[in-house]
Image (cartoon, rainbow, N blue to C red; front, side, top):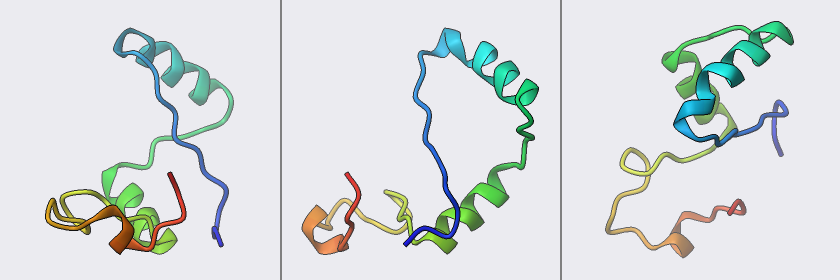
Length: 66
C-alpha cells in the first residue's frame, strides 16, 4: 500500500528542461536526492545496486511492481 501517490516520468534527454518547467509551473517544487531516497525507503521501493544486488534474483525481492 502506497503512503503517497507518486509517478515515475521517463523522457528523452532533450525533453527534460521542458518537463521540469511544466512541473514547476504546475506547482511542483524540487526536493533533492535525500528526500527522494527517504521517500523510496518509506514506500519500500528497493534500489538496484543498493537494496538489490546483482546476485539477487527478481523473484527473491518480493516486489509486486514491474
